[in-house]
Length: 555
Image (cartoon, rainbow, N blue to C red):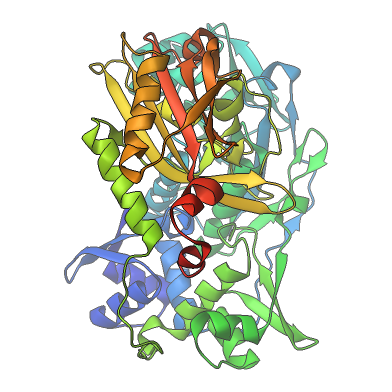
C-alpha cells in the first residue's frame, strides 16, 4: 500500500482553518486512511491504491475541506478550446499508441513544495496505474518553453538531447545504457533502433517516453503554465491518469485548462461526469440504517459527490477522476464514510445459535488434508485470469468467455478451469527444485443461461518420472477415504498429450479430466520437464454423491 507524509502546518494552511492535531487524525481515519506514524510536526498515512488523488497533500486537504465545509454545488472544471495540437506519427502506433494531454495556465508560480507534491504524484501514478511505466508514463513540462504544434514520433537511437537532471547531451542509446533511469526502464523499449519521442515545432525534444523528459522543459519555481502529457498502451489508463492530474492541478490553484487536439480529436470530451442512480431503500438495506434522501445527499457531499432528487431517486454525478466508483455499492461506501462509521450502533444478531462448520466445509477441509498428506502443496490463485494465459498458451479454443464491462485489463476473464493457473504457477518456479506438486481447491465459473459457480479440485505434478498412471493413482488415492472409485475413458484435449488423456467418470457422468500435459503447451509455458495433471468437478455431482441436498441448501 502506498504511503505519503503530511506536514501538519502545511495541511492546515491548505485546508484554510486551524484544526487540532487529534481532530485532524480523526478526520483522516474517517476518510479510510491508515495512520502509519505521527508526531506534532507530521503524520505518515497509508492510502488505497484506487485513490491516487490522496498521493498529495492537495488531494487530502480537499477531502478534509469537504468534511468540514460540504457544499451542494459541484465544481465542473471547464476545458477551454484552443488551437494547440499534437500530431501522432504512424511510427509510434505500435509502440505506445495512446496519448492524452492538457494545458493548465495559472496566475501564480509554483513553489518548491508544490513541485515536490506534483512529482510525488507523478511517481505514484507511474508505479500504480502506470504499472511501473509499462502501461503509461507522464510528462510534466513548463508550457512557456514549448513551440506548437508538437509531434509524437519514433526517432533513431542516435538521436540526441539533454535529459532531465543532466547538463550534457546524450543519445537515446546512451540514456538507456548509462543513466540509472534508462537502465531501470529500458526493457520497456521493444524496438532499440527507433524510439518514441515528443518534439516541438522547432525540432526540440521535450520527452522520451516512458524513460525521461528533456531538461529544457523542467518545471521550476518560476513556472506558471504547465503542459501535462501521458503516453500509454491503454486509452482508459491514459485518461484515468490525466483526470487525476487535472483534479490535482485544480486543487493547487484556480488553473484555466485548455484543450489540445490529439490527431484532430478533442481531449475535453473524455472528461464528462457519469451518473449513477440510487434509492434510499438500497442504501438503508446495505447499511442497516433509516436515512432519508436528504441525509444520503449530505453524506455524499462530504465526499465531494453531488446529487439531486428526481422521481424520488437520487441522481449522483461522478467526476471523471473518481474512476474507483464503478456502481451503486461503491456509492454506499462513500455514504458510510460521510455518515461516519463511528456513528453506527452495534446490534445483536437476530439468531442466538452458535455458528458451526457445514458438511461442505468439513468435506473440503478433509480433502485438503488428504492432498497435503499425499505430498502436494496448496496454492490459491485468483478467479480473475488473463485470457492469453487461459486460452492461447493452453491452445484451447475460447468458449463462452465471461468478461467484464468495466475492467482496467481488457484481457481479464473469469476462469472456467484451474489447470491453466497451476501451469502458470509451475512456469514461474522453473528454477526451483523438482518434483513440484501443487493442488488447488477453488471456484470456477461456467456460463449457460446464467453464470454458475462450481467448486473444482485440480492437481499438477512436474517431475521427470511423472506419467498418466502416476497422476491417476493420485486421483484415486485422494478419494478412496470417501469410498469413491472413478472410472476413466480415453478422450482428447488440447492441453493434454494425445493418447495419454482420459475423462473421469462417476456414476456414468463425466466429472473431470486427467492426463499428461502436451509438449506444445509445456513449451508455451516454458516448462522443460514432464508434467501431468487432473481437474475434477466437485459441485453438483461429486458433493451431492456424499450428502443429501438438504445439507447444502443451508450452507
